[in-house]
Length: 77
Image (cartoon, rainbow, N blue to C red):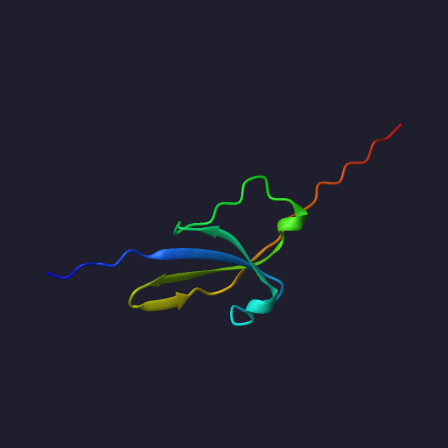
């Protein structure tokens, strides 16, 4: 019988487009295989990636960029 070890997920926001420079990365989510950003704000812009690990090792996802568009309104008087 083969057991599948539990997978641990950690999501990171990075200051650059790289998943191999942890000095500028901040953990932003754990233990879910998806990261949901609700009501994204400009301070959440950046590069995101995931590290999935278990007793067999770790795998790092590709980096994706989250950009937030700002709605600008002009009031004409």
